[in-house]
Each structure stands twice: as structure tokens, then as C-alpha cells.
Image 1 (cartoon, rainbow, N blue to C red):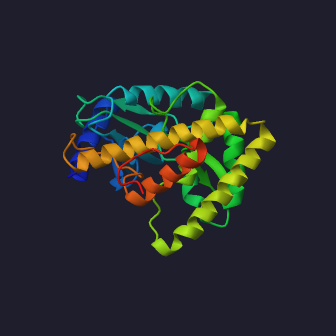
Image 2 (image 1 turned 90 degrees about the horizontal axis):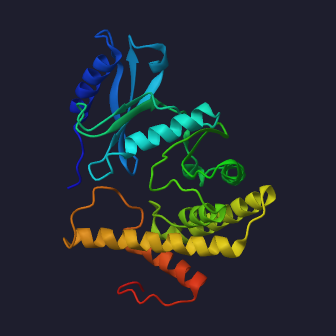
Length: 284
């Protein structure tokens, strides 16, 4: 069973830590931490305070890093977010960074809660085509994917982990974006698989057209990086299967590529791009 912290324990230890770091016992919760589901590297909680300094006013987020995440990641991400925030980029500043030994048992960060929802969650709404243009324009400035939108505008960019942050060819991020938008499990009946894939293809096509209007792109390079990202998806899917079979230690993090239907979709796309048979058992 995947590890899940007890929310009451997290709330108690976080408040103790905040009182110590802020130097006052007057700090208390106006809204106690509540678990927000989602997050690949972290357990996420929303809360708010009273009696705290002004910069801790409003709704806040606690990101508690999972046990199998590099303990240095909290410090790395907070540095990147704060630099981008000072530079005027819509990335929420980190207000507090904690190590594993600071009371919560795991590294953590506290930051303002950004309004909105993940842009990827808007793929099936009436604003989908507009969101494809918004994403393309955001990426020509700086290549993010975990973009939050609120009222049709970008409200924040989150998740600056070390293993996702790179300096390199913009085509890499375009290819990765295409791969992520095209795959991943959708909780819908098998009957809707066809319409969902059609909707995804339309969104991806609109995104590529919008990006091309902002900056020229080399489609062959994009396809190369898309194939590379698909291969990463399959490695992740294979690791999940091995963990489920007890071949390797359990994996606590969720994966969108562990189910067979999604893996088959990724394999078909990789075959289309490369023209190579993969010879993966059970991939048919």
C-alpha cells in the first residue's frame, strides 16, 4: 500500500514548525490543512493562518515531498520559483522551506495558493482551443507545462523539479508536451476512447499551429523528442508493472501510464514515428 501521511499529524507538526519559525505562538489556523489530491512528487495540503505576518495571509499551500523524492528537491524548487517570481514570471514565491528533520518527517515548502486549475484539465471544456493558444504563447516565453489558469488567463506556473527543469532545445519541450497531451489515462468508458483521442488530436494540432505562429518550429525535431518522451512513458509503465509483480521495490508515486490501454496507445505512436517494431511482450 502506498504511503500516505496522517493529515492530523501533518497539521499539528506544521503549526508547531510555523510558530517556531515565525517566532510567535499567536499563529493558528483559520483553515486547518486539508489534503488536495494530485501531485507527483509531493503530498499537497491547502490551509490558511491567522496571527501570522502579512506575507502569510490568504490561502496557502503545503507541499510535503514524498519519501522516494530527492531530499534536495525542496530547496532546488524554492530557489527556481523565487528567482522567477522576482523576475516577474507568474510563479508563486516560496515562503518557507523545511528539511526532513524540521518536524514533519519529510522536506516541505509553504507557498501562496494560486487560483485556478491545471490547464491540462481544461482540454474537455469549451475553452480548449483558446487554451492551446495560451499554452503556446506561455511556452515561447519560458517552456512550462504545469500551468494554472483562472478565468482564461495564466494564474501561475508550478512544479519546477530538478528532474524536469532543463536548459536545451525548445523542440524538446514541444515534443514532450505533444506526447503528454496525446496520452495518459482518462477516466472514461471504453466507448468514449475514440472521441477522446480525436479531441486530443485536435487540441495538439491547434497547439502546434499556435506555437508556429509565435516562433518557427522544426517538426522533425519535435517528432524526435516526442518519440523520446514516449519511450520514457514506457519505461515508467514497465517499472510500475515490475513493482506490482514484486520484482522491484514498491513505487509510491502515481503513474498515468501503468494501465495496458495507455501503454498500447504509446507503443502505437512510437511505432508510427520510428517505423520500428518494439518487440514488447503483451504489447499487442
